Image 1 (tube, helix red, strand yellow):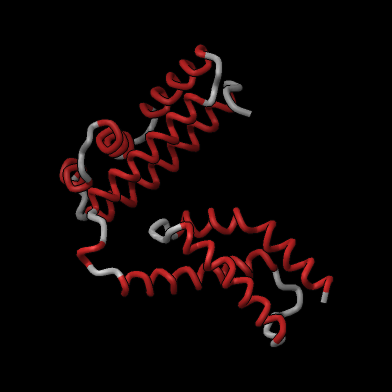
Image 2: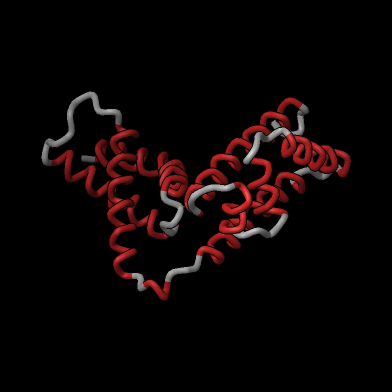
Length: 193
């Protein structure tokens, strides 16, 4: 039993941050505290499955744990959404403002990460340059949302999309592309390790 507990503890400690990031990226509406609860519940379920011989030999443990946790997270979100009254839900503008603030802070962290003023200026120049290399509608969406103060509905009208949800989805894809471009550019210029 001691060896079993050691193995579970190794997996539990080793996968914790990866699991939280994985779930948070896929289900950003789920609070971190809830994801941590789900993580613990996942290991309880895995243990039960092991004790009941419901796990096939040769199982990819990381994938198995993450899949169980993902399914539990979806169930948790469904439960939470039933408990939350429509009036208690944040408006899209509140969510957008919070996301905008978090993104601007993470971009600011990229710039402020250097003690060297010249390197910080180089990073700002790279951010500006990489923004201009984004294809349309990405450049318009990101500039309007993060720097222009436009709402998703206003951006939807400007770029002629059919729904706010499709604009949000496109904005997320564009921001991911932008972050990757910036990361690669910073590496090439030795601005990060």
